[in-house]
Image (cartoon, rainbow, N blue to C red; front, side):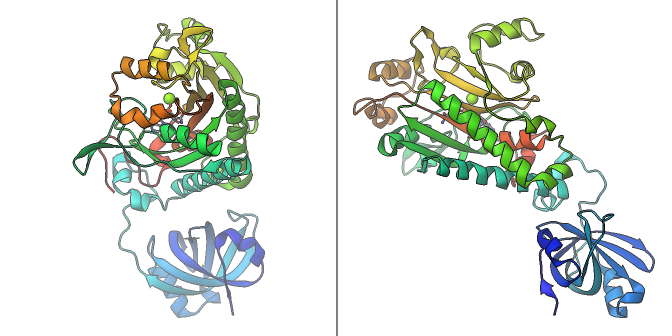
Length: 431
Ligand code: 4AD
Ligand code: MG
């Protein structure tokens, strides 16, 4: 009896007979010899059907198979250095589960709109498959690192009464007669839970009605947000560089095949180890002054500015102490220059832009109330948040890492839309 196996474990079955359950990825017909590319979700293997070795019924089944037909095949695993993955299957039996209709995504090139329209099928293509496997490892690494370093998972609500990251990108909904918004960030809740549990993180989907189409923005994206009581700006930079280095390392270790499928040059990733350079916003402005894209002091970076600053470094670079005017209301003021905030962004190398935003939070009730006024934010929805400054206020800091930005960078791909199974982008909610 053949054993049921998966393609990712195929090496363990060399010279024995296995059964695989999957789909036909592609077929090459050489008359009496047919090469079937079979995928089962865990990988792709080449199956060989040789007319003289199989029954007439089996050979006929091999003829009938169309792209993406569902099949159960049995055969002998053979080591073969010429085969992709190093093993192939000498097929002895094919059971057809379903003959697929003419499949819309063929090995030829397709336009992006067509692929997005068929995202539910596009996910089966080897590049998309590889990206999603890297994503799963990034998420696993995030959880492992935080769980192993004393952070407790305390998730934040999705439906909220207030904005965290500015009122221009809010998704509004109605909550039993009251206004509510889809969360932009779990940070405000983290600030409450870190006072209850010390080191916490929340990890979930966040929503921003970003009105611009860029290759770095999604409408719905996943963010992991650690928050630490008694931590300062410098402390979270230490945490971030270890955290990011660990995530990259896990991908290199566990997803080498996938990164190869994506033709990712992994050399720049191999160097990602602490420490990362730390420059101030003022230093970054000075760098930009010498570039083609100078930036007036006080403004936040756009993509070209991030790219230029990051291009001066091989590893991710921290930019800290942005002017308070270009950051959110909750940032602690810099005691050395109150125009500045104790904020920090982490910019990825190779032009991938900001992957983390964070900083030290305002500990003083007076300053926080003043900031709410300056940002024209209503007081009522933030009343509970102000309580943290009334009852045992301490310095605390945290950050948010965008999963999809991180996956885009690690995979070395052009556009963020390929890093989530069903991307929500400007104007698209299908499929
Ligand atoms: O810099 P942001 O807006 O920071 C916050 O939301 C903080 N409240 C987080 C915190 O301190 N707890 O967003 C953090 C990260 C960005 O660096 C980026 O990686 C990602 O979230 N991000 C997006 N990713 C995809 N599409 C978008 N529209 C994104 N907006 C932010
Ligand atoms: Mg940011």
